[in-house]
Image (cartoon, rainbow, N blue to C red; front, side, top):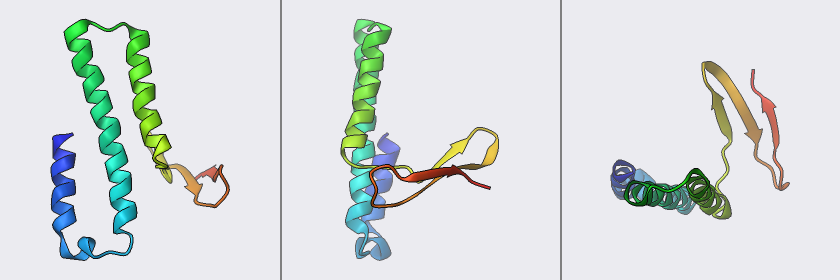
Length: 103
């Protein structure tokens, strides 16, 4: 996670990204993923210290995913293991984007 945070810091200083019209969108998504990752790390630390049960760990993972979802982050492409095609979702204004298997 610290590597990602360092990459965000470096990217924010790059001239072509620093003045990009979509800069706010990019860094909003990155911030949401970093917060979700921090929640996962905190759950992991708590598990190491207190031996959490599986339901509590699952709740922490759901909380981390919920943080990212509430921030509005959406994946436009989801890769499948061993498959280069993946699963693509076309962006739309509809709350449920149209998704299909890519060819």
